Length: 74
Image (cartoon, rainbow, N blue to C red; front, top):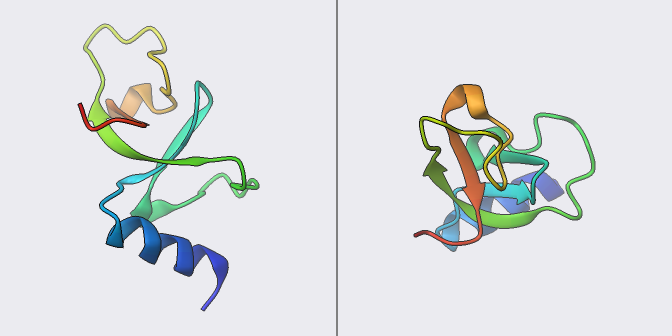
């Protein structure tokens, strides 16, 4: 078991949808750190639907996908 697997299990067990780095990037548990970058500063968070008029919403890294990850479920 490697660190990514341990992290995925932790996120899933605690109800998180993935990781985000404020205003820079976001990734889902199913595809954790696809960028290959160090995820040591990322934060756990919850997936949300971006507005139709997203102009780089806070925590938006996937405008084309229509979702982002942020700290709160709301």
